[in-house]
Image (cartoon, rainbow, N blue to C red; front, side, top):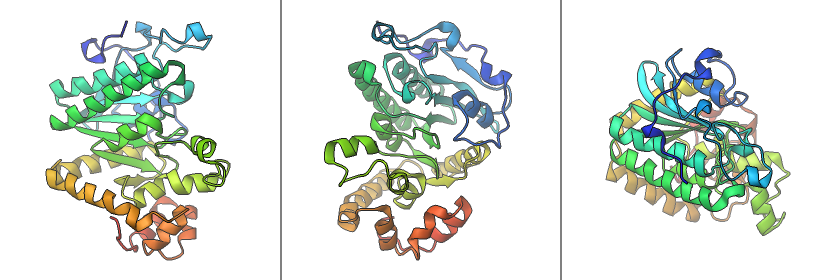
Length: 319
């Protein structure tokens, strides 16, 4: 039986508030609860469907797989610099942050709750390889429900932000969810794509994409590349407080520009032009060079501030 959505549950005490880590720590190295603790104002987080509810996946035990009482995702509400937000953080260490039935229902419920409660934003801290293969059909259905709920929240005037700076990044169906959000915020360490490097290599061969070439992987799926392509709205340093600052900047920017039809049509035009601009490129370096960036091979070595300064000098063939 499908678990109830998070919107119908009462808030619970959470371990997040008990161990409030410094907001200056690495976003990449933190786990789901530490990321929430660092982002939100102290003692403001209230968790929905927490571990005390023991809403573990019913599909893992028959497959002799370990379970988790929060099913690998933490959802709740809190304050970010005084603004009320709904927030979800995936636990990448549990089954690669994979989405299953319970995991997906918690995310869907949070987004549906946003439609009625109208918070300042919904923050999705993504750390996932996509659908959990152990419960693939349920996971695929969950992705479709998350997508629908994301678009419904945006249609209701609630900003939905994807924060990507984790070890797993955002791949598969959750990569699609990220691009359906109002804005995507990434660090250099984050990755965003539909198919993972290993999947591409398996299907198309190592000549098409060498998944062992980690530099290539980041030049194609990493935060710097996604920012240069316009798929990440903001590139931030790998600190939790930098992500908090970026959330506020993104919300202020969305408030000024709105979610207008003109903006969506402009985005569609940009995407339609991309194949013509970059279709023959085999590496991020070629794309960066075509954008007019001097010495593109230096970009992976630059810290975030230096990179943004260098990127500001580029041409704008597709942005």
